[in-house]
Image (cartoon, rainbow, N blue to C red; front, side, top):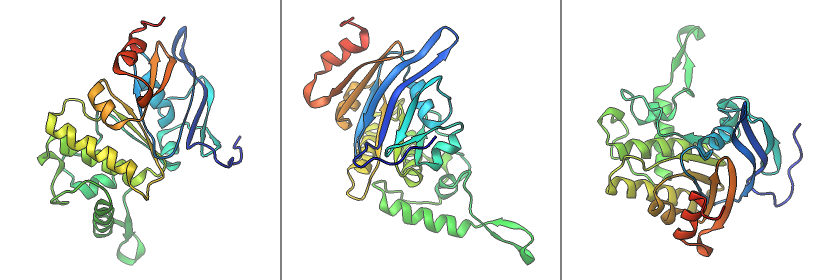
Amino acid sequence: MTRPVRAGAPLLEIRGLSKHYGTIRALDDVSFHLGRDEVVGLLGDNGAGKSTLVKCLAGAVIPTAGEVYLHGEQKVFSTPAEARREGIETVYQQLALVDIFDIAANFYLGREMTRTGWRGRFGMLDRRSMKKRARAAVELLPARFPNLDALIETMSGGQRQVVAISRAGFWGGRLLLLDEPTAALGVKEAAAVLEMIGAMVSAAETDMAMIVISHNMDHVWSICTRLLILRQGRLVADLLKSETSRQEVVAHITGAFD
């Protein structure tokens, strides 16, 4: 059932989200909300439920219980395609880029534009339109690619990550979910990715938010304003960065307050 939009509703609201695998509770009654233009860090030890939560929001995992609202409307996602249609884009550690394609082709991967072929009988890829629109979109994003014709296989890890995030920003009108966006990157490349994330949300014309999974506390501290901490599938803390400390965050992650 879809409920009407409430005035002033948060961009994302989660109520009692749970995911059980038999007796294992990967998520257990998780509730929180997310406002527009927020970058929220999702933290927790391995097995805390971070990836399961992201997959539920992305439509890759169907929750056992709970409700998800976007702009006050209840949503139920059975597939990632349904979540993408609502403006939710996910960038996993495995970036799902095709190495032998250029940037424009990767932007339209799975969403290819076609044009009518000979006598209207055959659909053909409209490469010119895809490249033109991708170039126009890239010009509006913080990232700067010197050559849109460059193949992904010629790019560094940081450049690939920026392509993946740019693609998500291109299609994602509401919520971006980033799973370890700086993992395995060098200092310089990680800094470029973090700059990209911050600029995308702070841009005046955006009306989106991000949830970022990361184990790197320095990176979380540089881009996030709020911190959600999961432990054994439960949300144990929802903290404003300005009102907490790294020591308190680590204590919540490790269970020192239990």
